[in-house]
Amino acid sequence: TKLPMDEDSVTLALKHVMGSRFKVDDPDVSPIMARYDPSTYGGWTHVMSMVLRDYVFVCPTRRATRAMAAAGNDVYNYHMVFQQTPIAWVDYTFAGNYHLSELYFVFDNAWPPVIHDYNKACTTMANTFGTYWTNMANAPHSPNHPEPTSPWPLAVNETSGEMTNLLMDVPTSAQIDYNKDLCDFWDSYLGY
Image (tube, rainbow, N blue to C red; front, top):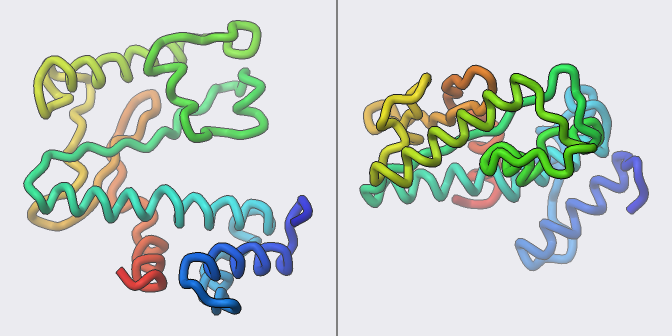
């Protein structure tokens, strides 16, 4: 597949991925194509990126979270949205928040310093991660003791069934039902 992707290359890639998933030669990917409008996402390459994000990470995480909560476990989810202002890190300029990009903050390590130069917001983000992660280790099953600036809600509200992520940003906040409509679509499309 060539980059940037066009509608035909996204269709071909999805047929390959879904063909493997459903073990068929010519899967119907038109429902997926209909759900991801390239004008919303900034082109077909970004559509493919969002499809993979939802298919591989976001929606399976939602299913796993619900299953763990249904089994009686306290489950906490977060969504890394912190961005440099101004964007000072080279990798963020090209990739944005990518899988594992939060590790610089979890370990409060801006390595390599030539690429990752901490500013005040970065230090605050590292302290925020440090507080939640340390609390989780020190107080079994609770990232909220001692009390952080913003409590980290359980991922599944037992009463409403709503899913909640802690938005990792400066400051943190709660995010309700992230990508609900798209994950409902994926659950239906995949037969969950």
